[in-house]
Structures are given as C-alpha cells and as structure tokens.
Image (cartoon, rainbow, N blue to C red; front, side):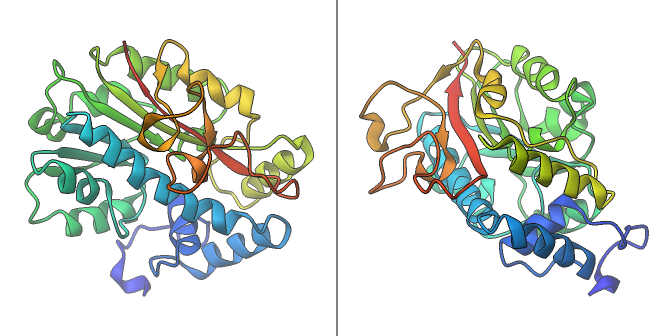
Amino acid sequence: MAERFPPDIDMNTPSIARMYDYLLGGKDNFEVDRKACNVLLERIPELLDLANGNRSFLSRAVSYVASQGVEQFLDLGAGLPTADNTHHVAQKVNPRARVVYVDHDPIVLAHGRALLSNTPETAFLLADIREPEQILNSSQTRRLIDPELPVCVMLVSLLHCIPDGEAFPLAHELISNLPSGSYVIYSHIVSDDPEAGAWVTEKILSFGTPWGRVRSPEEASVVFEGLELVSPWPNGHGEVSRAVDCQSWRHPGRDPVARPVDPEVKLWELSGVAVKP
C-alpha cells in the first residue's frame, strides 16, 4: 500500500488522520497507525464507537446546516476521504453547496484531490489550521467561499489535536471573522475522568504524534461562547439547547444526553451546532 502515497510521508509515526481512518474501517493507514489504535483500544474500547459515532454526527449536522440555506462549508481538519464526505451530504440537500476541505497531512491532500478531481464545487487545501489567514486568503477558498455570505465552519474532532493556548483562541479568531447567520459544527473528545483523559493524552504523545489533549466537557464547551446553540433534539423539539454526546445529537430514536448513559464509558465527543447571531 505504501507505494500509493507521496514519497515524503513519515510511515514510522502514527498520524491522527490515518488512525481515524483505521477506526472507521478504512484501508489508508499503516501498521504503525493500527498498532497505536490497538494500544488505545485495549484500555479505552469505546474509541471505536466514538469514531464511528462522530462520523455519523458530521453527516447529520451538515445535512441540518444545508437545510437552513447555508451553501458554503469550510471543513477544517477534514481527514482522509470516506463515505458520506461533507460535499456528498451537503449537495444531497442543496446541489449548489460548495466545500473547501483543509488539512495539513499530505496523505489527506493526495487522496482528497483525487476524490475531488471532477467536482468543481469543492477544493482541497493543504494548510495548517493554526494559520487562518492563509486558509481564508487562499485562491481555493476565495474561488468557492464568499466572505460576505454565511459560512459553516466545521471543527469536527479537531481542537483536541491542538495544544492549550492555541486551540480555542484559534477557534474564536475564525468565528469572529464569520458574518452573521454563519454556523459552527463542533465536536471534541472529552472525559469526566481526569485519569482516563490524561492516559489517552500521554499515550498519543508518546507515539510522537502531534496532539493537544483530552479536555473536560466544561473546557471544551467554551467554543460556543457568543454563539446560539441549536436544539440537539430531532426536529428541533425538546428541552433547552445544549452541547451533548455526538452520538445522541439529533439522532432519530434517541434522546440527547450530556454524556453516554453507560458509566463505564470514560471518553466521548462533546458536540453541538451553533449559529452566529
């Protein structure tokens, strides 16, 4: 499989994008990625459900935002292409939807550009999301996204990959540049068990993989400051809007919950969709 990838790829250090691909049942990963995931799964088996649940949340959230009339999506930390990518979901609702994918991993770039070669309403940008001006001013972004119109910025399973001191200032800077009526789709790995969160963080860093940390639900929720959360209930019904476990956000047949019901689950993804007033 290695010959399918660019020659400068580091095949000796696990990549978050490739690890996520493995957890989703993909084939675009290396043995080092699989071994790293298996080490994590031995202690935190819910990582498998977490990854798949987060992907399903992305699809439901994108579909919702597209149904609200938003036609522009900026998918940050997009990861390796899989089934039901952002443009597939958004364009099912609105064929005019435009998507710019952003990631810093060259493997993601290679696969993304191959996937999008015949899709003019999408683009793939190799960039560090810690350089928002480069992203917003790139020719690919300017071609597809009108900064005067509402945009959906996607921060799905991303900020936990960025260290403290950078993650939330970066998010707030991006959001501050959005026009009124824009949306944010967000999920973040969290834990209410400090020991479990610290173990996952330390283990991933020990692989040599760039990473931030598992945060508490309260820490991860600050991204919503200044925004209006939409209801996590299907059809918008139910109690007050709040951030919830991603697997329960607008999931048919499930009530939204702040954390997984099973107390043995130590790790989940806090999620929400919010609009900028």
